[in-house]
Image (cartoon, rainbow, N blue to C red; front, side, top):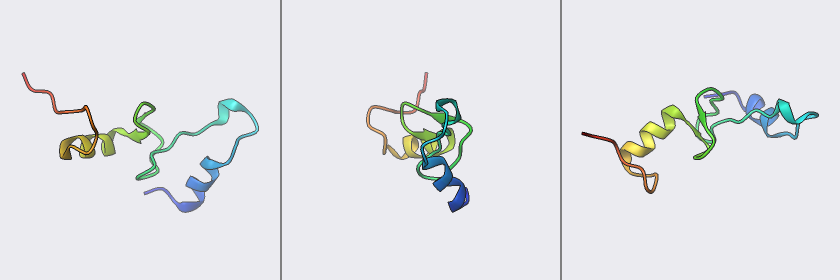
Length: 61
């Protein structure tokens, strides 16, 4: 979990547009962020495995 101060700092509008830090809304992780879903890869895998993300299912072939 990211510290509260770090997540609040990421929510502020930055001085320059290149300074935007996208963070996972569940855990606050900034690396491995998937823009399409708004969560990190770890939370995505957990939620997809439980069927909480509509239209996503585990691949098997």
